[in-house]
Length: 111
Image (cartoon, rainbow, N blue to C red; front, side):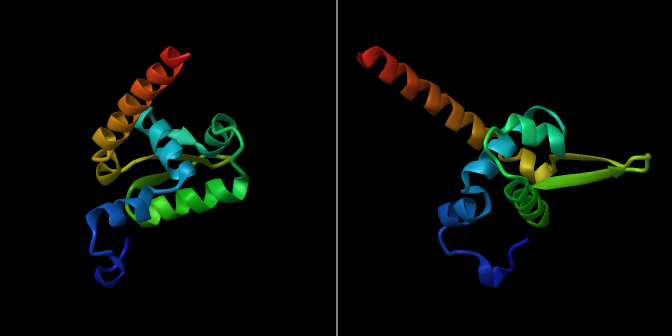
């Protein structure tokens, strides 16, 4: 998690700092539906590299937005899900989805 000293003074800047990358937003979009395994996310997020997915998940976990659960199986199974804090972003992602749908409709009817 960010320290008090690392927090931007602007609340919008704080949100952007935590989830402002394309990949983090798409990871959150997926995790809103259900827990995902690493390889499932990699396959679903077309174009993401293994390094970017790993770094994004680690960052989201460090910031308390994503929970990583390791199941004691052989081979080990790891699932990523939203924490309670991460789930509180649901209205933000839903609002982005609604705005995107409206924009798509406007562009499609423009031609």
